[in-house]
Length: 163
Ligand code: ADP
Image (cartoon, rainbow, N blue to C red; front, top):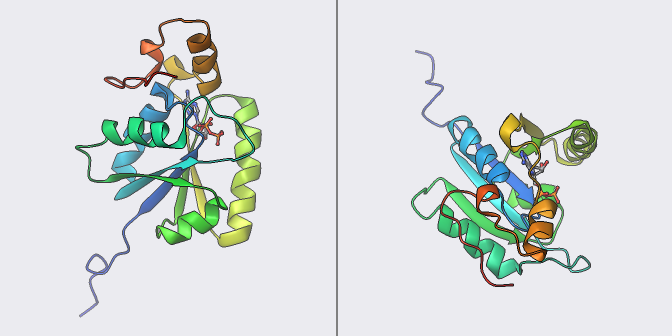
């Protein structure tokens, strides 16, 4: 009898790293579309001491965690180390990223090559939905700075804390 291939299968875990300052509807859409591909997704909020963020590490974690409070397959963590080291810690064999335009593609290709060379981790890239291709955290921060309503750029139901 041949051994069953499903009984001891390693769960498919993807790490979705980013600054998420803040998490936008573009990021949300990537996670929703990736959920059928993986058993678990770990959203990793990058903390860069040298880079000033609009939202604190705690605020970014709380905003994202509240979105996924009823989705046990999504975990939210923060990190300040090499992405591949974090991936190993969470038993993630894949890194999930999104691509909006050519500039993203070139950047992501380079990162994917580095991460594969460093740790053999494959990157799974999803193209953005056309309706979200113009949305970025930096545009959202700019709109907030000038007092504009950014509800349409955020995941459904996500509230922004005061900054
Ligand atoms: P980073 O600073 O690591 O680029 P971001 O938070 O800006 O972090 O983005 C995290 C990931 O999400 C990146 O792969 C980025 O290309 C992707 N992304 C950002 N905005 C969108 C969007 N509107 N649609 C699809 N992917 C997106």
